Image (cartoon, rainbow over all chains, first blue to last red; front, side):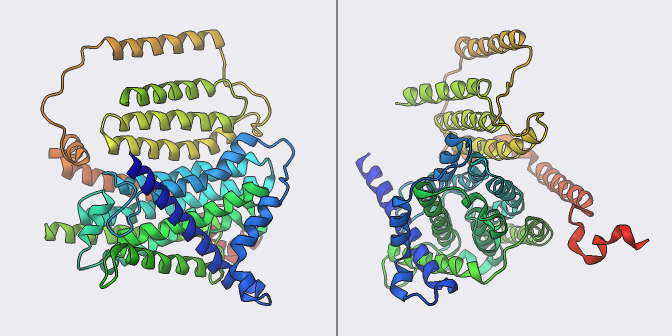
Length: 307
Length: 178
């Protein structure tokens, strides 16, 4: 029992460190602050945390406070629950029999959570943001499900440790590149990030990010970076061989690979335009979904041949 | 330990279920229903059926997310933050729901449950899949592909001329071309 609590605390600490690191990278890459010194840009999570903790909470007229607070705090909780099953090397806080489905369930929980965060504020921009998230979720969710199915089919198991073990010698990314890319796209989707940041778009004053202030905003922003970090960790475990690598110990490789994926995800933010939900829908259902299905077919045929 | 967890989850499920009819906002009713379903899914986890439990939570949360949109869309009071009641024909509804609850609970309590035979399998998910599909796997696979193709083609047909109409400039001036 003590060991389980200990490893859960470690997982939470690692996730929050990655979230902070993602925020640092984002601060450094932000072109609008190029005139500011590198030290101040890199220290952005610290200054932002201090500023938001001191900021007085601003409210709207007649918000649904319970749902609003719940919706802004829950993304961080979801990211922590995801982190519980992400292995570092050979160890994870938990390794349930249905780890892949567990991850999928948590990301589906964000459908209701982000919508509720937009709804609760009783503000039109936030509300539009919440509805946009649902529209976009309809687009990215099915490709994500099939992208998650591919490694599970190849490993013949829904347990994350089995998926990692099956990649011995050949990482899944080599023969499932489409599933890997669809997965990363979906991570950007449920983190409201980069080209899929439409629910938090500038055209609606930040959408679901428009109204939260002070500690609420801090928790929501941290949750967003934590979701990105959890997605990067899961991509490492499912497609990049987990802790496999020469010389260094397993956990070291897990951390390194997760960091590389996370930096790539963060860097994409200002290099791609934000897509409107209907365009995301068309892209997802007409291009990505058939591509992931073909990927899954190929993986299934290979898996049958191998067994 | 398990019994305690079950009692907590069962009470949570029923309490959240009752909450649906006492809150005065559609959004809160939806969230209460979602909490109730999550508690039921977690209770299924207690009988060592992890796949069934987790997939129940997944399906129900997804469903609630979509349902919220439609519930609010069809409400006479779309704001939802204004006072409203989910109840019509209050006395009859209470009588029916309490009656059904007692009937089902009595069934669960008084039914002669069989004793476990044999050991639980190492991977309950695989055993479940075999038990459900086993000999009918080929049929199920074909049917699922056909169903999925139907959904996709229905969507393509329905959205061929969607709200944004493929955002080609010509389409925007459709009405004025003639």
